[in-house]
Length: 129
Image 1 (cartoon, rainbow, N blue to C red):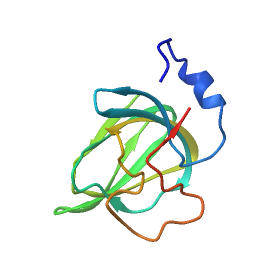
Image 2: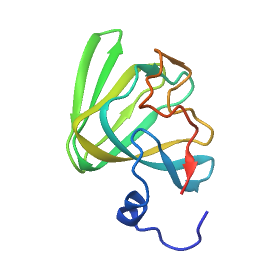
Image 3: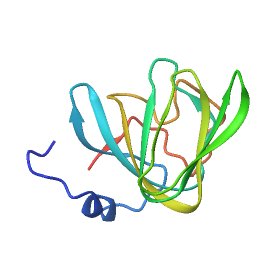
Image 4: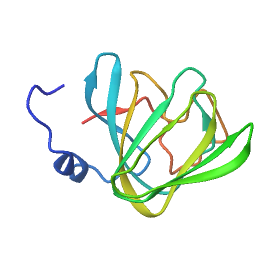
């Protein structure tokens, strides 16, 4: 991890892969991850942790399935949202987006339970910048 400031725009310009988060830094036992996204991710659940999203650019939609049924939250640029642990969700972005996430280090990008992972989604615990 760098002990210098990190320009997120420069970091995002350093890779092209979609749905393949990069670890920017760590805060205590949490990764700060950035990712470029487009199209749909996979339905998945994090059993033991919430998942924090901040939209840096574009628009992110997060479909949610919980006891109340299914709904979608829409996050424009600058918006934040936390998916509570145990809630099945599927992020997507029709026009593409750049996002920042906070997750405990070692958390899989496809959660603890998930649908079949398509080829365009990287099942990872994050890649170092």
